[in-house]
Image 1 (cartoon, rainbow, N blue to C red):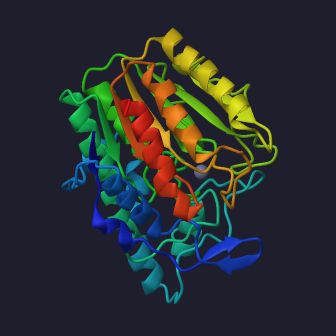
Image 2: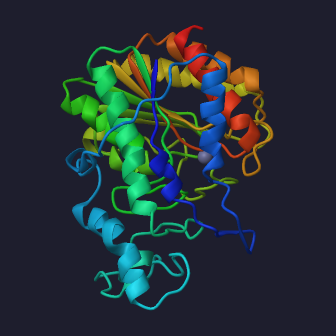
Length: 343
Ligand SMILES: [Zn+2]
């Protein structure tokens, strides 16, 4: 299983995240990747490959052109407007506002293209987001060319990025880009299995009316967990996508026994819809010591998780997502990969 990794992820390292009423160092930080790389080396995986440049045409298959234009120019516009700090959305078009026109000023546009205010942008965010998507693209090309599995060590993560909004540390939806590429490459049906602790709201929105891409997301119940306003079990898709979204929200304190039952239900749903290829949104924040999550998985459980996914017997692109118990992120992610690969 090849890993794709770009050092350009370091270009995105905001110094501020609004959490608990304070500005803190973001939980989503570059060192997360270092722990994964170290563990891959320790376990004898082949050295990571550079993904090459990002194919923006493939990105534009899942993101709106005006949103991509915004991401590209936001920092320059922000600085030209006289702002000294990082880009953080301070107000957004809430229900009840007409939101009939996109504002012309950068402050209004930041809120227009954000769905949360914990996520800051910096001078290097666009370059890092493109490099992250490039990893997903390179891994997807591997699988399209016959590899059984490939691992995209994406950072920043992607599953919270919607068609035209950033948030939840995400800017480009890497898993959605991969799924779209697999479809465009000839796979009749694709499944996205999102095991990150948080609901894959961006992926859900992008494929909401698409019956050919089946999202299964196992996540903290939105009654108690980010992203709070989406991810309930009765959200199942619409139009051509009716029935192609499977949400499996679980309560605080969920142990692996119950989590694995949900996974088996999700795997059954994927089988029933007849996917020909799989994309995994691999967050490791279901881990018991994660600082912003509330499930109780142990490190060994991620290996079992990978083995259960392997039983689907599908070619798979694995995209790295969240996981904030930093020193355990590498072990947990690589345990999943070893379970998947039958190692
Ligand atoms: Zn997460």
